[in-house]
Amino acid sequence: MEETRDESKIKSSGNIKTITKKIIEFRDLRDWKQFHHPKDLAIGLSIEVGEILEHFRFKTNDEIKEYLKNSDDKKKLSHELADTLYFLLTLANETEINISKALHEKLEIIEKKYPIEKCKGKPHKYTHYEK
Ligand SMILES: [Mg+2]
Image (cartoon, rainbow, N blue to C red; front, side, top):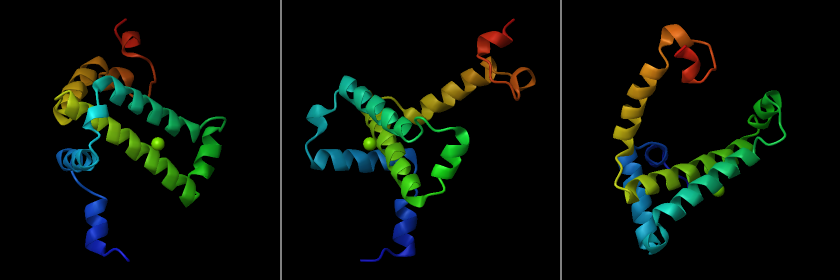
């Protein structure tokens, strides 16, 4: 069955709260909460990040650019990113961390650590700019 434009739009959007709700529904319908302890979710997150890295391993930046021009390869990478988001949002949910709030807080912290006038266009760790 072909997907309508509206259905496609719904599937490709959503805020963090909506996506988390969908993930938790998916999880609970399968009775997987029993396996979703923070440690296991963190391990799952780490494994999925590793699966992202598999797409880039042994490739130069130019080779990665070429690799991502192939829609099948890009689709596979997109699914690994989605797996990572799945575990990240489930971990945030299980630890009762508001990930949106945490992200905003963290951005405020790193804005202070990395003042634009000192670090623009430079790759150093914040301690470099404290000197
Ligand atoms: Mg995966």
